[in-house]
Length: 453
Image (cartoon, rainbow, N blue to C red; front, side):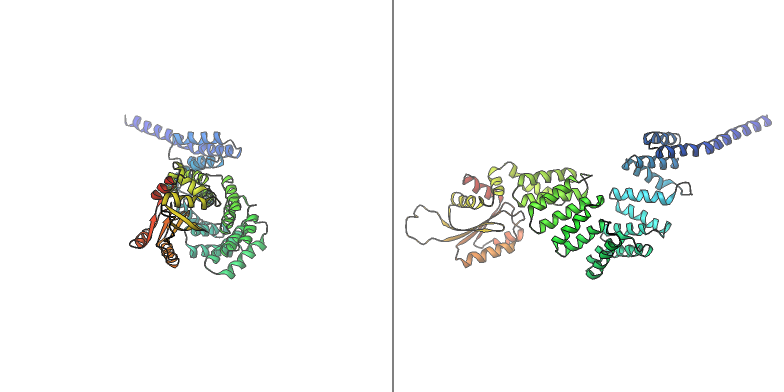
């Protein structure tokens, strides 16, 4: 009996050993076949083969690695990142998985999905694993720059340049970082060197444009960004920057054209560049009183990102415009028609007869007198100052102080400030117990309605 038991134990052991040996022989062959399928661009077949191995052994991290590679080649980036993260958390890098290549791939996926901290951790590790590769230091510099850590970014750009004196992108990024640190002379030297090293590296012109824009050389910046458009990676960013240059130069038609191109150049409707392009496009429409188009852009932004800048507040502010024709007319009528609208609002909505009208950058200023039934009498009438604002920002107390000073200099009995955008708390507090009346959106709507606008 003892001999029989020993024989059985030996038989079972041999079976297990045979299975293990067969697995160790055939497993690499199966993985090699997945690699071949990926090379042949048969991605679905490669994914199916990798999943089959994982179904048999969920802890087969080599199979997970190859599944991630198949997904990556098939442009299924989110799925690829999920597999690579699993590998990163569990696999032992003992030479079977090429660690340097793996970390390059996973860091690029982290960057693609705006996971900056994870990307930076991988890139810092790459500087240890592959210390002579300048690209690793350059990428670390870019990531530190995104985190607003200028000193660290400069340090890594310098290390990239030390390892490769001809690393054009490192020179260009280093130039912009230097410029932001107010080192203008060195910044210009670096960007000129980058362009001299490779005039065909069009991304360098993007950094030149950023420097010129900061110096308020909008014309030069626009030309530099035009060259940067030839780099597909920088095309949308360059269109966005060109639009902002035109916007700062108050050339709104050109700005709208560039922002619209930036939106149409988008490859990802939720990307920061696309949302900013729409945001600035809306700002141009708002400034040009094309509120419907501005609202359309804000709604698209809000759909993708509820917390993007002040978009939620903008939609709330203009909510009444979509249902209130009087307010819509006030905000959207042309600059030529606006003075007559204000005269009508003053006369029929406030009982004030305009004596003088001045066009201001923010709207219209009226000097008016009260319209009374006994106007036929030759009596000296009191003068009033009335401001109609169409600016989109709440009015500050500094503006109220200026209005009061102007009213006093013209011997006005009282001043009125009308706006649809509201007043800051400091403005409201300052106006108390002073001869000035603040008319916000609700009262303005009532005045416009009374005037039949």
